[in-house]
Length: 557
Image (cartoon, rainbow, N blue to C red; front, side, top):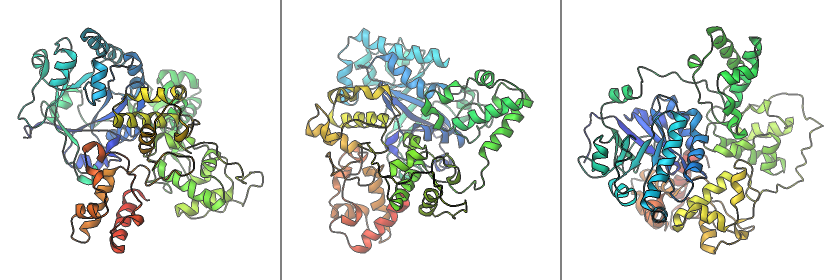
């Protein structure tokens, strides 16, 4: 059953959906989208920044949600969400959203560690902290059974707008006496939708509607016309432009940063690499003359002798290029990335690359820059030859057990692994004696190899390895199949390749003995850890070639 077609259509996504073509999503009639930001006290969705900034740039109404973990201090959870979203949640965005559900089973068990009154108090505390920080009542996402079983079907939260989940019905069952008489604001009516731009137009994706029309939703959020867009710069570049503009106006740089409330652009340091998503220039509390000076400064920051040479590349593309270039140079790839001061690339691998051009990379000599140009297929430049002062021997091996992996990425992997084991993520981190990872989230992981992690049994080690896209835990025998690819991605590749032969993709999957990829919905979004295409059994040479073509089109492997 489908809702009234006159209602505003929306979707919700997380890192399980991979990289999304947001323009195709808009073209398919979607009016709003909600993306996962954080989970519990430590997990940050690795696709949040990309999804958040791109949704704004294609004109979608957008929202961000936090998955509530009852066993984690609600204030810590609120602070995590606010650290990621708080400074870039605008009045025309949906209010902050709290996901309250008793799934998986270990989350349900966490609720029952507390009395009913304590459960309600913990949920309320997150809502109060985030509401006070953002100036709006957050939205609650839940369903009738969860709210009744874990929150006692209380009506005490009726002032918070309700996003209710209920599938296969003509109208949703609403908990808490029709939410205290207020009814629902948004309804998630399907978990198996199809939207262009996501999973290559294949299911599943969650579908939602607002309670009224698109224009009514716009009115609710105070949207009266096209919204102003921010300049396409990183936070670091915006700070550079602000400093230049302030100096041009004979003003204090710190005064401008304070007026614009821009301290967050560089706090923590990892924020500098994020794409700027603050106020548009015309919305800033500046005079017309000051705005003009800032626009001029931004144009200077954006100027480049080869402005389009890296257009379309993601951070992961650049990481791959550095490793290929380093191979040509006979040195470790991560060492080359560190020399170029691009460690931050790993904090958001799927985001568009917004760093310096090849010629402006610090710390690299002409030979190293030429190697990068070669592997990227760019035209060589004449820049005077090698810099004899640069030590490019590459003799020192990197000390990182997993080059490019940050502490936050390892935290995320533990949470994903724990979900497959029916355990809380923080419990698994504690068992592995890695609780200090949260002290410095964005530094490169320097802890033990998976095989050496204290306290973990073999099943737990294997689950962590799978969450990281590794074949199996071990010292020197770790094999990465296709990092970043989940089973659903590989299923899609099989179906597209099979169509070239007018055959069914599932028959190819069965012949290749990969049926396990679709055993359950959860399995579909596990990292792909099967054989590489060229090693798959029972497939003809031309079939493998078709798979390789589709694989290359998917992610440039």
